[in-house]
Amino acid sequence: MATENPTSVILVDDHELIRQGLRRAFDRSGEFTVLAEAGSIAEAKKEITQFKPDVVIVDIRLPDGSGLDLVKELRKDNAEVGIVVLSMYSDDQYLFSALDNGASAFVSKDAPAEDVMAAARHASAMPSSFSAPNLAEAMQRRLSPTGPQLSPREREVLNLLADGLGVAEISKQLYISQSTTKTHVGKLYEKLGAANRAQALMTALRLGLITSEGRG
Image (cartoon, rainbow, N blue to C red):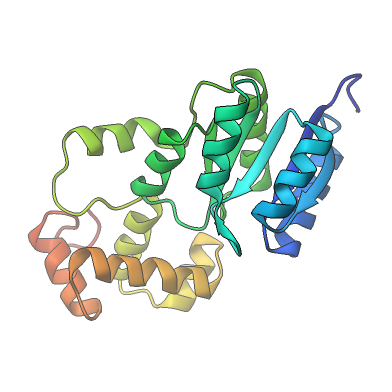
């Protein structure tokens, strides 16, 4: 059921399929109206200037620069606009970069569309208050860092690697693409200073990230 005054949204992402999926989800909800889409920072600035939306959904990686620079500029110009940052990676560094640049919310790209809409509701109602899944845990890791800082998704992937699952099996269990799984595995190897699965699991075991029985 459509609301009398739907929240207006502009989608900024260079992947058309992602924009289309989000547009359908927002349109179906009846709470939002998507005013425009943009695939770059330059396009986004034009659309935002023309339409003045309540909420802007911004991908971090855009072809002509970082979406975080756009977030910073938008927040500097307008304290009332809601800004939701989308990221392919859920690492703490991206979450805190979104927070530090003035975003209202942070959502991983592999989260359900419902999570993006929930973030948009929050951003519209409280643009200056930051929201993100696992924010409390991320703050704890920032204040008391111990070893490599793994995102919640990376911890899930690590546990499944420890259980002996391969990329295809992990992708199926977590409902994410194999390319996304490979990206998470690559980030894990990088953070653990490992060249392969065996080294990664040995380092994770030594750091207490997993137990000898598998899951941590």
